[in-house]
Image (tube, rainbow, N blue to C red; front, side, top):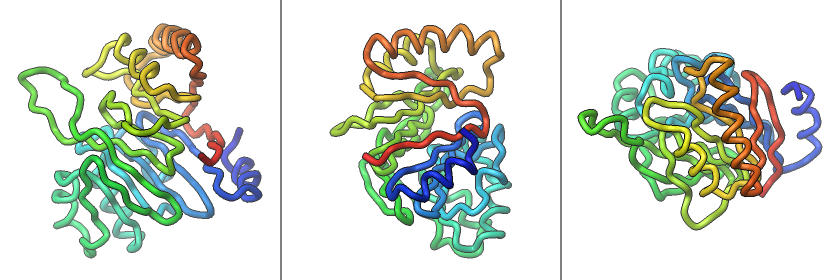
Length: 236
């Protein structure tokens, strides 16, 4: 359903959340007039995703999740925009922004408020790409106990089952069996794909056929979201 129409519907239901997918791993969450954006990276429509945003969450420092130049421009244009991310991200941004108080370094196993959103963090480390490539910090975010964005990781949140999970569908650090195992392990009600910019139309067909099948076997609905497509997420 188009985002504008869904916004009108959601305005009648307190607590419901609107999720809009942008290219690759960027998603925009809207609730009660507030906007939270996760991972506006170089493959994504950063300016569009960040329009009216009050909070940005960055999972890790890789450019496909974190476009430093365009994020700095957004911070300069929106002086109240707050950014939460791993220390490496915050230390890189701090010299380039006027008000470093709006930058917040986060670790795994923490919780904070972002407007009307409650955010919990999980994980801590990027998935292994190769033993000769050092790992970096990666923080996954659970928002309102409703939706989980793992960044570049297959860590499953401990202590809760999140009904909506964003699954990294294809990456240099993963294989299809790991994607399927992650979906099964989350026990989510529904999953939507992220981290998909490197897939061709043929690749989508191959990977999504298997992920959708095995998700269904374990009671999880897999659904593909096109760029700019929006869905309503019920309150937990």
